[in-house]
Amino acid sequence: MSLKSVVFAAAAAAAFATSAFAGEAMIMVHGQYARVSSPTAKAGAAFMEIINKGEADDQLIGVRSDVAAKVQLHTHKEGGDGVMKMMHVEEGFAVPAGATHMLQRGGDHIMFMGLKQPLNHGDVVKVTLVFEKAGEVEIEVPVDLERQDGGHGSMDHSTRTN
Image 1 (tube, helix red, strand yellow):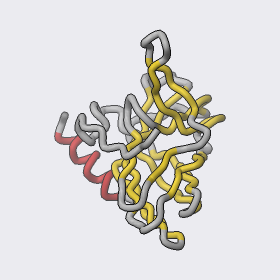
Image 2 (cartoon, rainbow, N blue to C red; image 1 turned 180 degrees about the horizontal axis):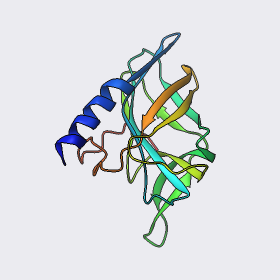
Image 3 (cartoon, rainbow, N blue to C red; image 1 turned 60 degrees about the vertical axis):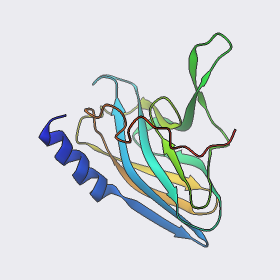
Image 4 (cartoon, helix red, strand yellow; image 1 turned 135 degrees about the horizontal axis):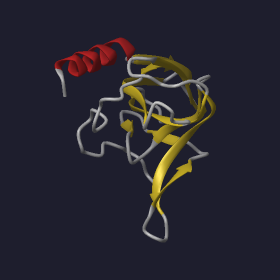
């Protein structure tokens, strides 16, 4: 990774860290970034670390953004044929009190379908996360086309229970 990429990633992480408070729920978002597979892609994805510093469990139940015709919470699951398939998760993702839920490549993520504009490296996408208890959390998500592993290492930090 080039020095420019490291500086961009560090600045983006500091600039785009977000917190929301609602009752006993306290949601923090760190390390958010979006990417597309090519400049002409019609779909993209966003990844981040969602931290519930509150005393009550919460649930990420929805997501919105003007950047695409449809924005959904997605995950990857292995089908009966052994092939990983992406699917919409209507119920959303649990974020237990005092825990972290990772939205990362190959796992849970935000899916942008029908992009209305190209997503170029360095652009910023406005996204609204909707939580059952914390309510709406508006974040800015930098487009980072150079990040290789999601920036969180290879460990799965999710606290999901299925």
